[in-house]
Every structure is written in C-alpha cells, then in structure tokens.
Image (cartoon, rainbow, N blue to C red):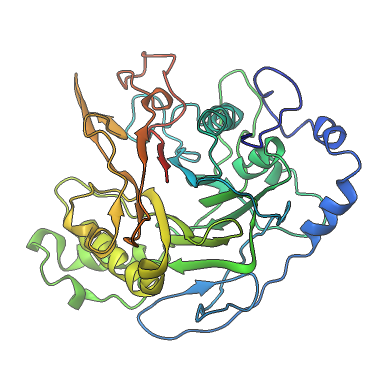
Length: 403
C-alpha cells in the first residue's frame, strides 16, 4: 500500500522550498483548477458555548452535539474526500519548529532554520510506516483562504508538507499562543545565509490520508479561562502571592488547542495537542496540566467511550497524575520504556523523558498492535555550542502506532 507521498524530484527537498512552486504545478497539471477551487471553499461558522472556559471550534455547524466558540479560524485543505481503506497508522511528533535558542541553550531546536529537512525526515518516516495520519506539535501553519498562500505562509511547515503529500491527504492547523500572547513563528537567522527561514503561526497540525468529513474539524481550548488564585491553594509559599498573580496573567494570554477531526476512513475521532511544559521545582505548571487533561476529558467524554485517538507532546510521563484526566479512561500505546522521546543536557549526561504519547479508547476489539519510537530523528548529541552537526532534526522523537 502506498503512503501517498509524492516528490517533485528524487533526492532531498531543496532549501528553501518556498521559492519553487513550478515543480508542484507541473506535478498536479490538469487538477490545479479543481484543487484551487476546493481550497477557496473554506467556510467558518461560530457558535458560543458558555461554562468552564471550554471552547470548541469548527469549519461548519457541528453535528452530534459538538458545539462551541470560534475566536480564531481553523484552516481546512480539502485535497480529496475519498475514503481510504486499510489499518490506521498514526505518527505523532513534536518537530520543535519554532524554538529559537542558540546551540547550547535550553531552548535550542535542531535544524530549526531548515524546515525542509524536518519535512523530508517526516515524509520518509510516513513512507517507511505507510502511515495515514500525521499529528504534529510546534508546527508552523496558517489559516486557509481563497487564492495563493502568502510568501510568509509558504515558509511554514504546513505549506511545505502540503507540497509533498499526494492529493488524497487533507491538512488542518490550529494556532496556539505563547505566554506573551504572540503566535507568529519566528523567522530565524543563520550565519552566512539569507532568511527568513520559517513563517506562519505556531500550533498543532493534523494530516489525514483520505481526508476528514466536511464540517467536522473541532478545536477544544484546553486552558481554562476562569482560573483564580483559589484554584492554586496547594502551591508552596514561594509560588504564591505576586508570583502566582504574574503566572495567571501570562496564562490568560496563552492558548493551547486540542485539534480534532473526523476521518472519512475510520470511526475514531483523531486529536492532537501540546500541553504546558513543566518547570523544575515549580508546582504551578503541573496543576495547570492537570486541569488541562481534566478539561479535555470533560469536553471529549463521548469520544472517550465511542472512539478516539489522541496524541501529542503531553509534557509528562504516562504515569503522571497530571495526565489522569486522559490516561484514566484510555489505553496508552506502550512503547519500549528504554526508548525516551525527549532529552535535555545540564551536564555531561542527558536527562531523559518520555513526554510524547498516543492514547485510544477501550472498545472491545480496538487496540494498538504496534507501538514504536524512532530515536534516529531526535538529536542525541551532547548539547553544547561546539557539538555539531546534530544527529536528528528535532529535540523529540516521533511515536508511531499501528492498529
């Protein structure tokens, strides 16, 4: 079975990709008019849902009780809605597409300024596993609109991925925001090279082979908007008072979406998210992540029973109490415990973590048949300024699940 990945030419993708659209035009000759027309037909409808700070977004009026609000749009690239048969195979990966610190700093992202290398590695991975669902975190994308994507949008991971996937794939992206409220992906800089290198907005992305049902794209905002100091009474004194006030102010500006779609070929709802990271010695983010997982369960409780696959960088181990809202009612794709998905360097040896997970519901006969971690795509070199080149294209390893 083909993974549905096409290449304009053999060999690695050129860098930068945004300057070359002729190859894609030639490859899709005869279908370009239809393809552009599909992309122009993007409809956004908004409903308002009150209560518990939950927001749901959709590209059309929701069905089966999926209702909510839409303060920002969701893009919907309809390549083809012809359902594909075959087993569900999912890749989830934090590609660290926007982290911008220098090599040797904690926020460093391998190959950050060379997004085409990340997309090349991703499409090779998809082909290797014959995957039909891609879930990305820290991916730069944009909101679909009639006409040609802008020059900035053509610098995004979403646009680059769209160029190399065949027409029966459908992509959607949901932007998040940082603690200061910003969401634009930083353009980056590289000695001796002319930028910008990255464009679009930071967020999460789903791509599905065979597409997903019209009007069944959903976003749940996982960060409650009505939090007060009363929700954090268990904090130690060092994190209370003015410190807590400042953290709540930053949290109010942040968005952390859960992006979900209903695929044409499978019964399960497909969702991805990126929960807030932990901070060493700090309890505040752990409480926030606990509230996030509980809110996600409350909003998707029907899907937890009837069919769901949810994956992403959850910033906690599978046994962490902070993920109880998700892990308590779902089964995790149990990867090899010896294969971590993230590591950081604070000295001569790395600190390793398994933060990236895939979960699914517990319906009879529905289960994972294979769970894998591909550490070859995660930088494993000692994170210092003089340890180059890197061995991977992200600071996380992808998780791959077969059903």
